[in-house]
Image (cartoon, rainbow, N blue to C red; front, side, top):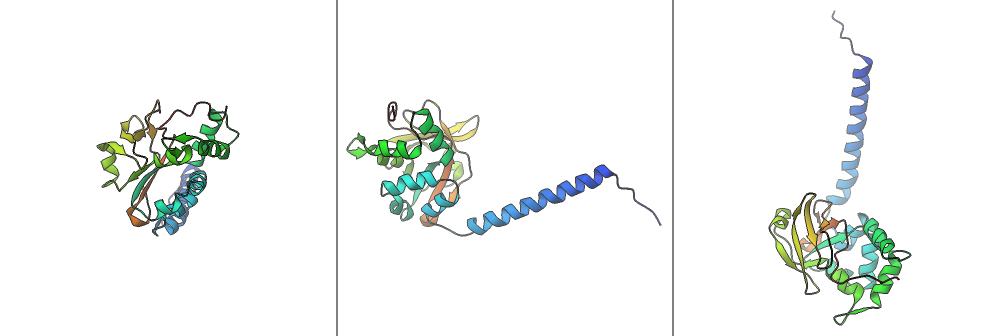
Length: 196
């Protein structure tokens, strides 16, 4: 009879590996229960950290447009809205959205104008097409520039000094729509003084 000696380090490594795999499988199972289904864009936003964006879209009456059309949405997460609001001197993202609604930009309220600047009407062929897309015309009639940088794929608004990095893989919605999380709000106009 041969005995195999297992060291304490080997036991600890095995336990940590098992624990990690268990958490990974649990996370995959909970994500896949949502991700395995095709949802409306508004449901994707609500369940993936985009509640502020969803609130702003609802306030502008744009939710049903996104739910019922084929679009590519570059969505700032809740954290991005909070950071932007603070940087502009707003008490919170709600104040930022409210103040934007009160500004006229090319015949449209400022909030709608900024939100539609995050929407490309149509679907990019695949996520790799962002690498070569170049200029994308947005729903407000202006353009953003898609490209790559040191952090991967990004998009840049006219007024942004730096591109906004795409921070997630594409999330798919009904109607062939796609949502990409981004780490900065795309700016078609200068927001300086919006809350000051």
